Length: 196
Image (cartoon, rainbow, N blue to C red; front, top):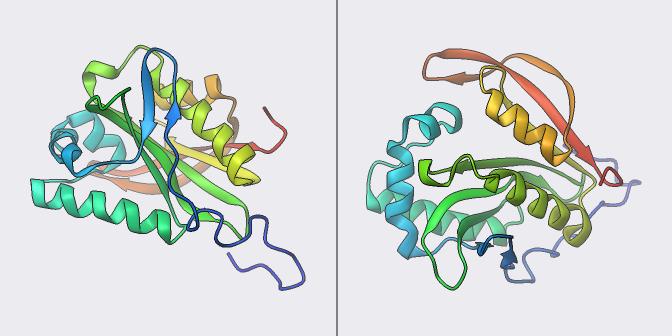
């Protein structure tokens, strides 16, 4: 999105690239931390999980592809276009999920959340806790104004996460994303500064 030069950027350029990606503590002995090369096997495993592949369109067929993806996560932080964390046990534990912001637009002040969990981490409220934490980071620490959460209408678990985190349902985007089984309508949820 291009904003008229008379409108100041919501977040000044350099806010991310001039700092290291933070480690964010979570309840239950978990943390959000940058992805490491030692997490490559987790990405390959996630790429094989039917639920993750179905809703996230994740394809990571080899360790080499996973290492390239992890390196790209670091590049995207420095380019200020994404902030992706591993969900992991504190003190060097293995990654059990991914959460972060893609399509970051500092000038416009918005971003879209993405997340997935390996089967062993599901059903314990981890996605909700992690989404709340990075939403606070995005609004309070980074200074964004609007956050989006989009998911297939056939994915009620993500709808529940959105509601529990405080993302308001704004509507349905018809035939908005193609999945392996065809085009899906998507729910659009959003949170803006001041909602939490």
